[in-house]
Length: 100
Image 1: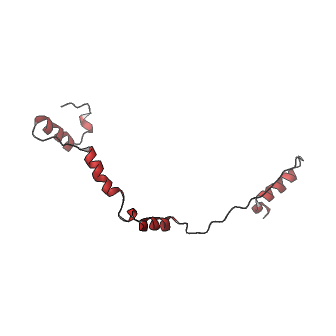
Image 2: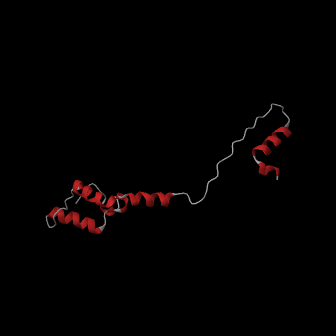
Image 3: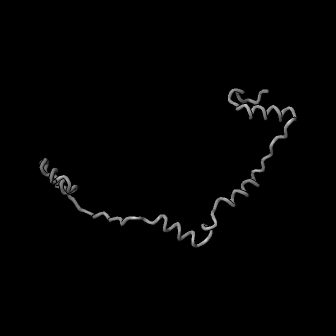
């Protein structure tokens, strides 16, 4: 039987089912996508998520565990001097760890 697919790529059970359906020994499975989709909606949202308690639980679960510090704004203005020492000093102002 040829169905457009290479027979070597078909698992034995699938190939056997195709042949049995073609010979009329087996009834072809029917699929109702709309009914399956509607049934899947019941599983997409848990019961707790449909209440205010679920929103509170989600807020608690996603709350940061550590206090985050705010970055400090710094103003640095480079003067056009051409002296390499000035650039080193500016780098130390920008990153204090360089002066250690």
